[in-house]
Image (cartoon, rainbow, N blue to C red; front, top):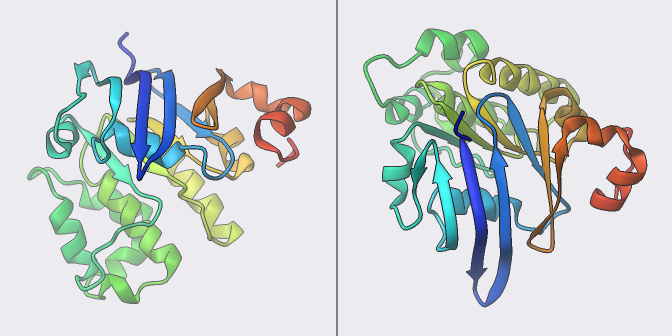
Length: 232
């Protein structure tokens, strides 16, 4: 089976800084692959490069297509949902309007989205900019799940959220992974251990580890790769 994502010798420079320095890894089709690393090592830049949001060199294959030099809108039309780190909701628009803008077909899955996030249905006419951080994250994820997406790129979904909400979002992503391949950037090791099948670790713009999620059960390895204790 073709990998959902395959990048090879990926380089990105931004404002004179060489952020990604020959990154290569595969995301197997199905399940969750976690992209890990300390702050500032290039995780978000990797997702943005896959989507064509930053200029890059190297090879990028997404859902069986070589997409280097493709514009972002063409890449997304392959069937990619993106949940950015900063949520990027349209603050002046209502919840309903944000979701309408995300529709890509008449078969948008509103029933499924509102089943996962009933609070969004209750706040359909509320401006997104007045939502709490957790509610904005719900909206950001809901936009990605509104349509059938074979691939989801999810960047730091638990960032800044209370533990109860973190658990709820993990449950949502668990359900999403039953139907979509998920490439997940996440700092919360508890969430990663719960969700991930595979892990890729970046450091200083390079891949320093690839393996199964069970590798995170080794506290010494986790401490060496991530600088944190393994029992998160």
